[in-house]
Image 1 (spheres, helix red, strand yellow):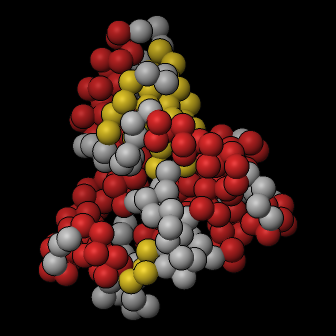
Image 2: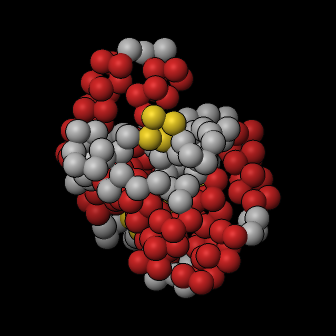
Image 3: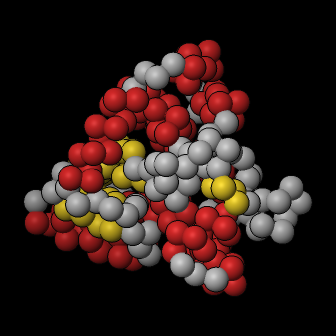
Length: 222
């Protein structure tokens, strides 16, 4: 018998471990094909809700936020790049032509757009999420830029003019804030937070094997 799971993937498009976690979760689900199916919903979480639209240089941001040295920040980014490579996600290097991913940005409008996409269809929301992660982490583009958001929305199969209208307004702002507040009230303070059937939490960008084992245990427990 195939077990169906509902998964809320709470994350931010500027969170590298969210990109890694999503890839690892996908691979775990692929290993479980035939035994487990899953429906993913992407839920909002802003790592830096007070970030200005123009963003902040990434090393400055990391050293200020976490109290680490620039060298430690570089080492952490290289570790993340290698973890991404292992699951098939490409993180650009800061020294690549064009500077790569050199700044961190405000992501509130991206979350509004993702909320709208989820109302359109789960598949389009998924395509938009993946497109935004690639645009930022692989291509070094700003997820605060409406031009970037509109282009990625169109590539995800969404109507570009409707996406532009969403971004030009404040529609879905309250809904995004309410969802963020809900997850904060449930104790989610770091992402990714992978919530299965509204009850079981898997925290962090775990290895494929950890996701696979956890999903098997949850499915077996009913």
